Image (cartoon, rainbow over all chains, first blue to last red; front, side, top):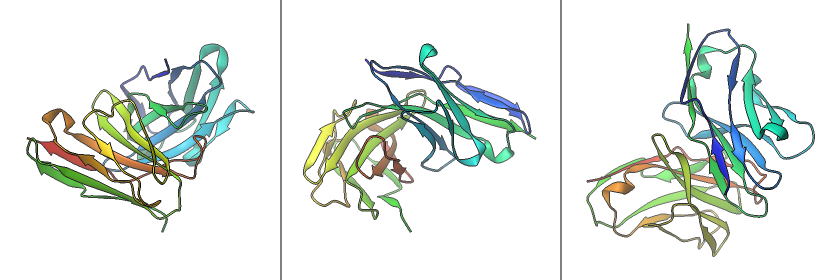
Length: 113
Length: 113
């Protein structure tokens, strides 16, 4: 069965520090992978997505993610965090050949000034 | 402005009283979906629709109904709400494929007493 695991429920970083949010997936075929951000009281916004090709994907707001098939991971990174990045981040898998999505449980990011 | 709208944004109701949460998109998207978000569980897909009159169950469809009579609208119906349906609900739409970007509505916070 497909699943998405985000092992970190909360992460706290200082402004200007680098960030890495972890995502591991379980899926039989090549997955379609997504990272979304949810600011407080808002809906979700797509940061980036991966289907095939270059395993390093660039997204909006300075985020990037790397697909590692051998580790079944799709970790989100940012070299220098801004206070406005404080939000909840969700990793998701889209099932090939269907219209279903599986979301992780989310990682809440806190940014210290 | 391209957007997904949901109404109402907040709703408090009592067990057994039928309710409908509306969702509308103005982007001519074929695909629409409903999710519920619960603490520690992330987003879980309730139902989705690939086009008018075409719907299918997500992971947690019990207690919910949907209909897609027009391309722009995808209402979520709770015919006999129960307290375990207290949650934050999101509607989303995308062009057509699972690889297309999903655009999320602002959410509807439902409390069932």
